[in-house]
Image (tube, rainbow, N blue to C red; front, side, top):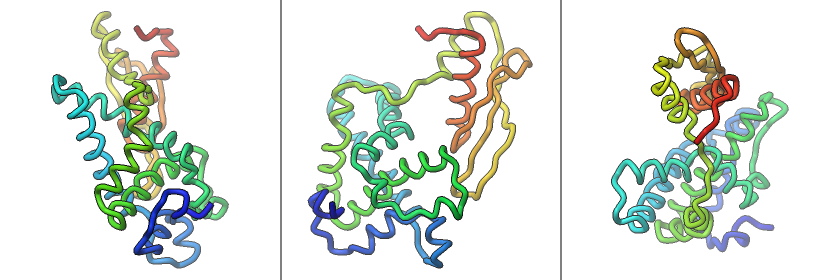
Length: 223
C-alpha cells in the first residue's frame, strides 16, 4: 500500500519521506547526499516530548524519577523495533544490505531508527498535532496496557551484588563501526572477575546485555 494512503498523510513534501527511509548504505551506493539520520535525531526528541506529556498527564502523582523510568520502557530500542514492525515501516526502507554487510543486529537497529526518522518527517510535514495523533495510535495503547519492552538487568544485578557485598564494574572490550552506527561490546566484572559479556548499539545497551548474561551465568533470578 502507498505510504501516504496507509497513514492518511496529505504530504506537502514527498522527498522528505524518501529521506526518512534512506539508510546510509543505500545513500553511499547511489551517491545520494542525504540519509535518514537527521530526521531520526529530530524524531527522537519529538517522541520523547509526546510520550513525556502523555505520562505527565496520566500519572499526576508520580515523581520525575518514576516518569523517566516508565518513559524509558516505551522509547527504548526494543519498543521502537516493535512499533516499526507493527506498522510495516521496513517495507519502505531503502538499504543496501549486501553491499554494506549489515549484521542481523544492525538491521534491527535500522528498524528502530525508522520509527524515529518517519516521526521526524511527519512532524516537519504535518505538524505537531498530526505527530501526536500518530504516536497516540502507535504507542499509547501499549502504555495503557503497561507492556514491558525494557528490563533493567543492571539494577537487578546491583541489588543482588549489594545484598551479597559484591562489587560490579563494566568495562569496554571493543567498539567498531562508523561514528553514527557503532557497536559496543562490554564486560560485566564482578569482584574483579569477568562474568558476562554483552553487545549493543551504545554502551548502556551493551552493559544491560552484559548484566543479563552475568545473571544467567550466576543463575540469579529476578524478583
